[in-house]
Picture 1: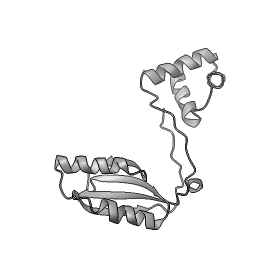
Picture 2: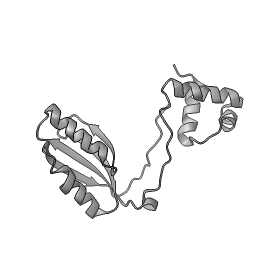
Picture 3: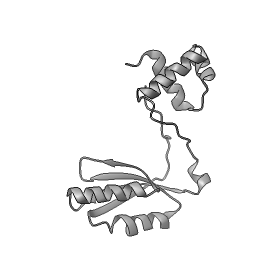
Picture 4: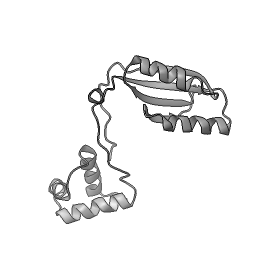
Amino acid sequence: MLDELDSRLLTELQKNAMLTAQELGERLNLSASQAGRRRQRLEAEGYIIGYTARLAPDRVGLSVQAFVQIQMASHAPDGARSFATLISTRPEIISAWTLTGEADYLLRVWCADLPALNRLIHQVLLPHPAVSRVQSQIVMDQFKPDAALPT
């Protein structure tokens, strides 16, 4: 179980994962060693699964974000495995979900430009033998940035 200090610590780390034990301790009114031990425990128990840097897409040459829905022609295990392998190898696909409803998969993609998105759809996704339909929605504006998980 998480106590209130654990929840606050997780909230602070989601805001800035580079906080030192000293800085965490100051924010939580704990000693640096107590804050450090709590962080280590939360890591060991699997509450914290990693640390990453958030990049500015435009600064690294990415200007088109899109959500791509995939309908499968077949749900045979071999086709699903093959499609999952394809998705895992494409760096422009930054996340993927299986869904209920009409679409089987939802992909979030970042591409350099519209021709790159077109190539991904027409030369990579549609030719896959298990795929029957691809529908994309291009993001016009993201007015709420990716947020931290509620703790």
